[in-house]
Length: 191
Image (tube, rainbow, N blue to C red; front, side, top):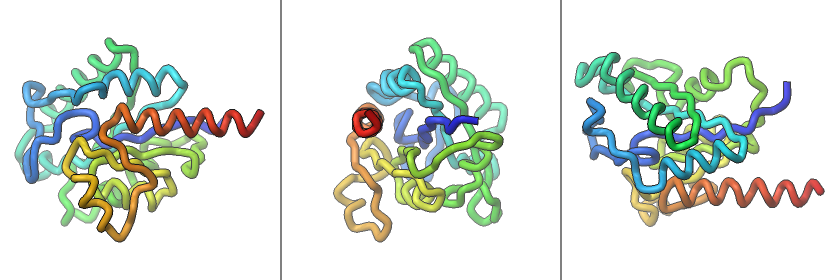
């Protein structure tokens, strides 16, 4: 099987507005797409990338919202993405940090679940996130990481982290431009 072109995205702060520290998106009415996020997802889809959303959603284990609520938010998010010409698959970790699961970022279980049965070259794959655990998770699996400033982290604060992202972007739209620029550079090198 041919290597798949994959882009991994965190959800809150990348696709939709970050709800705030220790807060959660608990129902669809609280879910608000960030400017140009739908266009960025369509752009990557049109370029042949599989979009895999991987997100920690510990509010389920904490009893803050139900699995049914999360399913409804996800269903409607995917519908909006499709309506705008994009496609995505979504994978969540519903556990708390103390549960010790393998899927909670910065562990790599969600990456493995999202790519199960597919041949993926993680070295040429990107993970776009808005926090240090996203960068750490991406580095652990071997992805190129892009930190966006549209969520929980101020980009200037991230420059002090021990583990640095490969790229910084203001938002998902700018991140998609970085990904496509590198794809085009690779294509030119191969010709």
